Amino acid sequence: MSLAEKSSGFRSFLRTLREHYRIVHSNPLGRIGFWIVIFFLVIAILAPWLAPHDPWEMQYDKDGNFASLQPPSWKFPAGTTHLGYDLFSQLILATRTTFIIGAVSGIISILIGANIGLFAGFYGGKLDEILMRFTDILYGMPFLPFVIVLIALFGRKLEFVILAIVLIIWRTSARVIRAQTIAIKQRQFITAARARGCSNLRIIYRHILPNVLPLLLLYASFNIAWSIITEASASFLGFGDGNTISWGGMLYELWLSGKTRVAWWWFASPSLCIILLVTSLVFVSRAYEEVANPRLRKR
Image (tube, rainbow, N blue to C red; front, side):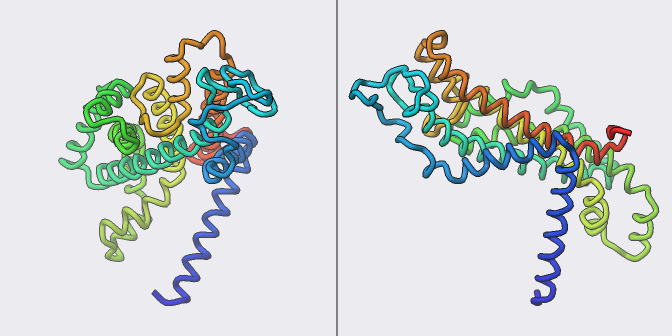
């Protein structure tokens, strides 16, 4: 690839970024959600440097006493656990785990769903029948129980948690993209592309994919949000990776300690983070939903 082609590709990438930034910021809720997501992303990236204490090290107050179940204070902004662990440090490091699970699961699942939807909708026939019946089978499986069973079978490591989420969360996006592909492939510009001798793969990825991109980004936001909720739910039930800190795992440790009614701060901080991040992702998806469905825009 020549230098000119690389420069042109980079400029095209920047234009795409600016366009999506404009889409999100054109919606008031999308703008709020975007900056909250960026805030959590920065915390996730800088987590090891932002955490004031070792999350698994027992802490002591200014008088040298064991800091067990200390409420929020200047030294411990989120309080401490019954074992004297600093919840603020755990909260910061858990943000990285949550983002890894959410982003990886969301991106992989939308890639799977998009390709299944594109190929099923474009080719139709037996391929469409096979892919959609497989999707229907997965629709018959309850989401969280299916994920828990897979984690129980393969193990509680982080990669298996992601795999369990990815294997089932793509199904809705696949159906929606298939329906949109069926509608788009009937349009005149697809007929013109065929007349010019474009291959099927070029038509799918060069002509159809850009037209379903707002839907893909919409469901990518939903998939990331659902991945975060699923991981938190599985961790709270004791099926998370015990070697990593997550918001759901923090709630699980609270339940094990039996201090749920005493240490309100232990419950409040991870719960608030889950609600805030998931709600922000829904706000961002709302901005893309208005692009995919203009009837939602205010007149």
